Length: 393
Ligand code: SF4
Image (cartoon, rainbow, N blue to C red):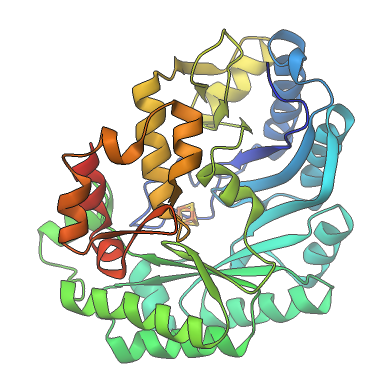
């Protein structure tokens, strides 16, 4: 039985951008004109279609969070965003303190738009600042400059947003430790409630990968990147932020409810091109959870919905083994780690016993610790998290 009392997360994917950043491998495209009206209509139709054919059992589930991600959701008119929120609230009920986040590219939001977004129900902004220095924004191929970022932050506060998250990237080509310290200093001077700090990774099939192969871009060396990560931990912790996940820091009371939901295995529904959904006990039978994914091409997505066809392209029932792997992978990303008792209650297995060939080695190498019944990554383990995950699987 699906527990009626547990609030779910709702995700909307808006896959359009002003231009495609050369390091990005997200499901996003730069097209002109953007088919905003048709896409918004398709989102509404997808919710209706899902509730009619497969999600009936969710009934009036409470919603813990709504998250508009992308792509660039701030390219859309506030009215389109408000329509999606209204649709959700017509079928589900808002949980207490429902968090409603919209990702913002600083180039795409002025004070009027921010004001309308606030009035339409958005209560949290996640602003893709990435850097406060123009030369690094240029190196990243971003469409905005530092003055856009500063202005959007001021405007957001001015119109009343009191829950603002900033995204920053380190490990940018040509960036030094001092440059990174400047970005952190500036970010702290504007007092955001939350910060997401990502290490630039060069993904396959991106222009950056090709440029790297040709020697056209050179990233800071590994030692510098490790020090950059450590510097962020140190400066943000001194400023009173709690690191609660490998890349995320929050002022007290301002963790991201939506993303935390993913990491603690809460259920979520994703709408839009390429969106993922997960229900713990499944729509299609009992098991260890059902996951499904939508058509990634936004135009095909729109077309399928206008023909009243399903947009689900992949659907899988998790096996117990997969659910265990996922619980470890997601649990270790959190600074709180994995509660050994909860793990045993859920899977009927002792984590230490099941991984008795791995855990002593990781403990000995100082990559994980077990303290007060919780298994977590050490600082060294965070820096080598991929190796730790691989050791488990
Ligand atoms: S704005 Fe974000 S989603 Fe769009 S191309 Fe750049 S990194 Fe990718």
